[in-house]
Length: 110
Length: 110
DNA sequence: AGTTCGAGTAAGTCATGACTAACGGTAAGT
DNA sequence: ACTTACCGTTAGTCATGACTTACTCGAACT
Image (cartoon, rainbow over all chains, first blue to last red; front, side, top):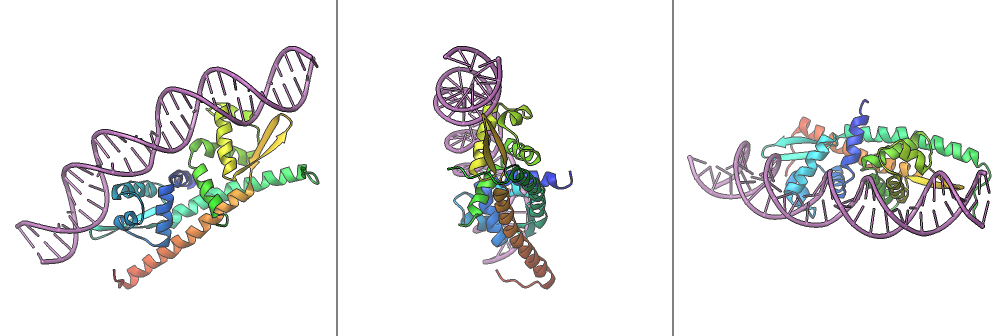
């Protein structure tokens, strides 16, 4: 239970399409709330709430620049997700290998 | 539109905790619907519906074994997610680098 | 052939959460 | 010091979707 917990939160956070859009926009360029809301079909408060969820998930960090808050991606959160995925990818490959081994030369329906 | 579309679907599918549990269980061992539902606090039809979503997202594959359906992870879907994550991770690192650079040099307009 | 078990589908209910509107607080500019 | 602008918060509404119950289909076993 190192950062796999963060990975779980990150997956849940990225399940929402609007949050994915915010995430991708932030990947391109760090921005403030107004900037983000301007390029999205939702209001500022909505972006603010999504940002809070993303921050709780460890995917973004907040940097106060005067009255503005600049949000940017947190590489650690993305790395945790990547690690979680890596672990399960290994399981997937293993299971697929076992399946392929069980069906060595069979598997051509119709 | 390479496989990033599949990655989007995969992210959306994995946003649900129950689907994540099914996904992790499948990563450990391919199973039938009854097997899955037996180890989860939800009914069989619920597992069936989640399996359908996971299959549509390209994360699991179905293999008919007589009356039983054996579900296993699809390495391609997991790989697509991993690729998507990789791309945005690069963006995150780049943005973070720019941020660190901006704090050591100080001099960015607008 | 009949029975039994297992899986998928459909309809319906209910909870979660995404969004908007209104308010308060804080920092810069005049 | 006042005004302006931006950000965050709260309360409330409404849509999305997760879950269950009941039904039908298909395959194996007696």
